[in-house]
Structure formats: structure tokens, C-alpha cells
Length: 305
Image (tube, helix red, strand yellow):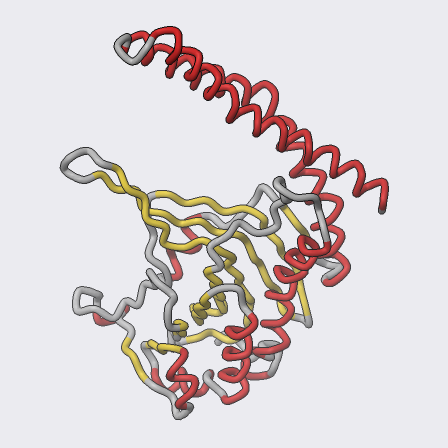
């Protein structure tokens, strides 16, 4: 283990110093150009700006990108994979794979922009419940009439999917207050057959923390048992971000908006227990939901038809 830590620390430092070099190069080139040419030689100065960017890009491609990939691959294969298998022996971890955008779009739970990326796919079975989880980044890039481009982040965090033998007719959506850009499908422009409507439970504290929407209120109340509501409040209290849960067809979707890219190796500091705790947090997000929501109970194990 000590040898592994020494090796990964050497790999981290190589990446760090190369990134520092990436910052220093354009500063040196542009500073030299400024003193040699002066501000008046604006055209030549612009050429040096372009030259600095080109050199920087070349340095990244030749000296940095490969080292970053090696460091990332080593960290994920030797630490992340090992910790996942310790907690969930049957799990498979594919760092470069994720959910297709069509899968997330098809849930109708979250607004979809024009930029989508997903990675760090983990699949397996825990307590007889099949699951999938991946990191998601959903953004929308727009350009105004003046040509100014802006990017809005709609979702950045982890998305988990749990299988159930029961087919959910409620299309139940549970949104923690503060979770932005959820697709509530409750507006008048949504087709009546697809429209959700808001409702409240008898639990005042739960209503204070969450907003519930559904199509079939009778089944929604059947699913929202006191145990499930307490479990959701506990999950929200322990989570590092706002949560949303959706019961779609025979799948339970759990989105946690943590606003960070998880399971990535540190660059600015050496690998420490804090990083291992972060990996454990990602694993616990899966196991805690299965245990806390008790989604392996009979209520979720009824046959689909």
C-alpha cells in the first residue's frame, strides 16, 4: 500500500508541475512580447498572444494529457475499483462509460440542455436490487443577439437508477426544495396525459423539505409510506447536495445535485484519507438508498403486470 501511495504521489506531482508549466509559458511569452514590442505594436502583440496559446496547446497535448490519463487510470483502477468491490463485490466499474442522454431525457424528470456528459458508470446488485449510477453534467449554452455566449449548468452530480419489479403508474416525482431545473411537467402546455400535479402528504416536516408531483395520487400515497418519507429526509440530511427522486415505469431514479465531478483523483494535494472518504461517500449513496428506502421490500417487488 505504501508503494502504491508513493507511486501515485509521483504521478500526481508530474501532472501538477506540468499544469504549472502550462500557466507559466503564456505569461513568459506575453510579458517578453510586451517589453520588446510595447503596447503600440498591437498587431505583433496579437501574434504573440496567438503564439502563446498555440505553444500552450502543444505542450498540453505532448507533455500533459498523457500523464493526466495515466494518473487518472491508476487512481481509479487501484483505489476506486477496490473500494467499490469491497462494499459491493458484484459491481462493475467503467470510468469512461455513463448513461446515454436518451435515457435521462426519457424520464421527463430534468431539463435537458444542449451539452451533455456522463462518466463513472457503476452497475451491480445490492440486497437483491439491481442498480446503475453515473456522474452527469447537463448544461445549456446560448448566444444572445449581441453574440455573447453564456452557459447555464442544469445538473452536475450523480444519478442513480434502481430496478423494481413493480410498474409505477403514479409517475411520482419528489423534489427537495432548492433543487433547480427539475422538469415538473405541471404546466398548461404539457399534454394532459403527461401532466403531473402537486400534492401534499400528511407529514408537515416532509412537506416543508420536499415538493411532490404525480399523475396518479392514489398510488403516490401508496408509495409514500412513513418509512420512505423518513428515509428520504435522512438521505437529504446526509447528502452533499439537493436530491430528486422519480418513480418512472419500473425504475426509481435518484438524482443528487452535488455540483462536483466525483471519483476524480486530486491534483493540488496528495491522496489522503479525505479522498478515500469521498469514494466511500459515492458508494454509500447507493447502499444507503437501498437500505434506507427499503426498496427491496414487497411494496417494490410486486410483478410488473
